[in-house]
Image 1 (tube, rainbow, N blue to C red):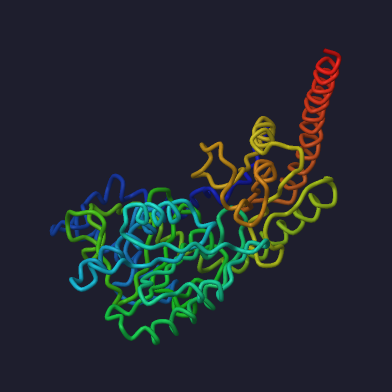
Image 2: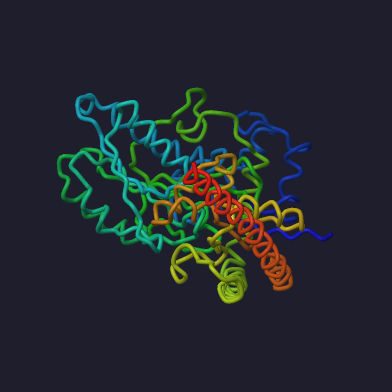
Amino acid sequence: MKKIYLDYAASTPVDKKVLEEMLPFFSEKIGNASSMHSFGQESAEAVEKARKILIDFFGAKEKELIFTSGATESNNIAIKGTVRAYYSVLENKEKKPHIITTAFEHSCVLKTCQKLEKEGLIELSIVTPDSEGIVSPKDIEKLIQKNTILVSVMYVNNEIGTVQPISEIGKIIKEARIKNKESKENYPLLHTDATQAVNYCDCNVEKLGVDMMSMSAHKIYGPKGVGALYIRQGVKMFGIQDGGEQEFGRRAGTLNTPGIVGLGKAVELLAKDKDRDAKKVKVLRDYLINRVLKEIPRVRLNGSKEKRAPHNANFSFQDVEGESLLLFLDMEGIAVSTGSACSSGSLSPSHVLLSIGLKPEQAHGSLRVSLGKHTTKKEIDIFITKLKKIVEKIRKISGNILGDYYANSRNIQHVTRNH
């Protein structure tokens, strides 16, 4: 049985050219990039080559990009590092800082902010997206206060794929900084988690107006365990772990040279093929969405059909449990997701779907299908054929269970009345 992978939002296969670029740094070019000898300098040069590729891709400047273990760490550094920097100034210590984020952020952003609030370190405001999964810049503008130091809004939602108006929010933040004359640190700052956006959206930091931006390599056909964080020049930022002075003193720890080399190569390849791959994936995704909505009854598309990234389709199936659907599809050799891969161990309904107004039972019946550059029309056709049969099967089982439940309920009521 040939397996079909439709979970590219969770992770992508490493491109062969990326792997080829990485391999020498596992066994031949073994130096620590912080070492002074020739082995170390060879690794350091490879790291800086990768940094230059990312800087050019994002339209950043020298020393504005640091390497991390992935977007989760990048997001933690951006948020916690900003709070630590705020409290480092003596006059700030008596005034609690304020952060604004959204209700459908990735858990590594949302939980980080909620933990800081619980620890009494910040005030927190959470913006709810509309039913289409889009955050209103005006809603953010209304929440900005004199003590607001950070606004964090993801670029593309990881579950429903909706694209947020980051550049519009960037303009609002810029105006707020001008008005906030009391802030010596030029607050508020704007951070975006661009993990799901890098493959398909314009991530030029100047156009977006962001001060910080996070990403991961394994979403763009690079290796797992490596990512990057853009930090605009002049932003006061404290590292969240202590150790060496790597990455301009903002991220201590030995550099993952093979991973960084792989990330650089992945971005280099992406820059060449981005538009072509996006167009191909979008055509397949629209074909998928239209067929599912047309051929399967009682199904809805979650999130805006127009304002969404090309690779994402998220559906809710009435009278179908999403985990069951995923497992049945897996037995047929098809890999999909019920939401974020990071939340797959949770039995709670998706906080993303709840935030756009779905009821818990609707959220539990959700399925995320995400495509990539290797996806084919034939794979989509096979998936839809299998999906239709499985949905019908599950609904039949569900209907029988519900029928037995209601029949038993009526019998119990009948016996109770007779007694």
